[in-house]
Every structure is written in structure tokens, then in C-alpha cells.
Image (cartoon, rainbow over all chains, first blue to last red):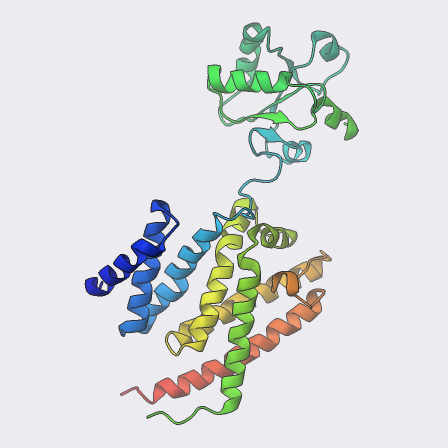
Amino acid sequence: VDWDDYFAFRTAAKSDSQLGLFAEPFLDAIRITMVQVVKHKMKPWYQAGILYGILPLVFGSFTLLLPTRASWNPPGIEEGYIELETVLSLESEPVWLDARTREEFESGSIPGAIWMDATEFEPQLQTLMERWVPGMEIVVFCGSAACDASQRVAERLRNEVGLPDVWVLTGGWESWKRGNH
Amino acid sequence: MEAREPLIYVLIRWVIALFFIVAGAMKWGDPASFQQSILAYQVLDYPTSFVVAHFLPSLEIMLGIGLILKRSRVPALWLMGSLLLVFVVLLSWTWWLGIDVDCGCLGPIDWVEGQPAAIVRDLVLIAGIVVLYRKEQQRLSRYEV
């Protein structure tokens, strides 16, 4: 690094940048790279590494800050929710937890589902733990998108029992019935 | 001092370079839309398409700039050619399977519809890249001892 060039850039940048501390290392990386590429003669493949390796990584990183950023996960498994189609496409069968009332559960539920009410949580936990093995997804559902019993059960399982991979089924029992399962 | 380059090579280089710069710039600001185009090919999963959607447009822009600048022209041609070959394979694959996809190459301003036209366009670009590569080899061979 040519430190004179770098410090000249850095000093000028202090008054220019409105992006704050987080962006400074990125901006520095661009400034240093541009100095290297434009002012100094470098071996072609080293230049290529910077031009087609480092700079795209730096410029691409800026797009992570855009509101139009891409999604890492399929829709429906953001913030603890999962779509029925996503559940059905899972490689292994998840554990289904029915968070509706006991009467509703007994009148019909997803095959193999365990009834678990947020208010009678502990007695059913044993049944769940007998079925669950590490790596298995747990999907909780209640009557429809409007109910919140499944959210309360999922939160308790995550926070009190410390189970990973606990999801709330988007649309609940209604979405299962709509799918004619 | 180097002799002036024939105009046809300059023209081909600028057309290919501008195509890559515009293609990258059109997609750079909207990674979410580009990701949907990628996912339509049914080849990549969400995390991989996330990485491609965020970083491929920047790479395309830099390749275009690299081709205009004299520096690192050969690596740019190699990378551009490889990228276009991958696109041709993907487009042919989806065409074969009957999957209806937009090329997604130029983002919202892409005028080409359907895989056959996009494949032809990519093949024309590859032909241009081969011509430029041979010219570059001739130019660089003069410096070899």
C-alpha cells in the first residue's frame, strides 16, 4: 500500500463520507484498490484478482443494504413462520403440534400430530420429547392465521425448552384443509 | 508504439463491454427481482441464488470495465466467455425441459423473449469474445521473448 496516497484519500474522505463508521472500511478498500489499479503497474493476474474478485465483492456487499435485497430463505420460513408447501417439501417428516383446543384436536387433526395447548404445556412436553430427535423440525399450528396459540407454544418451546427449528404453520389448520389433505 | 487497432475490434470490444456493464447495472439495484429470475431456472436453491443475485451484477460491471481498460483484458475475456457458456447451458437446459423462463440477462430492459433468442444472443457474444481473444493473443505475443 502506498501510504501517502492512502492518507491523502483518508483525509479527504473524512469530510466527504456521511455513511458512518460501518461504511468506512468498505470505502477504504475501494480507495486503496483504485490507487493500486490506476497508479501502479501490477501483474495482470493480480490485477484481475482485484478487478474481478475483490471489487465485485465490495460493490456487491453494498447491495446487501438495499431495501430490495434478495432473500436467503424461501418465503414463509422468515421470522419463525413456515408455509405448508415448504413443510411438505422437507426431506424428513416433521413433528406436528396441534395448539387448538382439545375438542378441536379430537374432532380431526393432521395425522400423527401431538396435541399441545399453551396453557397445559408441561404434561404434553414428555410426549413431544419421546418423538423428537435432534435435527427434526417441529411445526406448530392452530385454527387459522388469526389465532395466536401456535405462536405461544412455539415461543415456549424455543425459549423455555431451547428447541431449535420450531416453526409456526402459516394459515394453521385452515391452510391444511385448503390443501385437501 | 503500438499500431492503431482496426476499428472492427474496437467496436466489438465496446459492444460486449457495454452489454456487460448495462446488464450488471440494470440488476445491481434490485437483487430481489434478479433472484426471482434465477430461481425460475430451478437449478439453484435460495442461499446460492442469494449470493449470485448480490454479487454477479457487480462482477459483470467490473468485467465490462476491465474489457474497456487495457489492463486485465485476457482474464476478462476468459471470465466473460465462461459466464456466457454457463448461461447458454442453463438456457438450453430449461428450454429442453419446457420450463418457461425469462433470460433475466438485462433485468427490466431485456428485449429478448424466450430461450432460443437469448441463446443466439449469447452465442453471438461468445463469437465476439473469441475474436477479441485471438486478437489479444496476437498483441501479447509481440512482447514475448
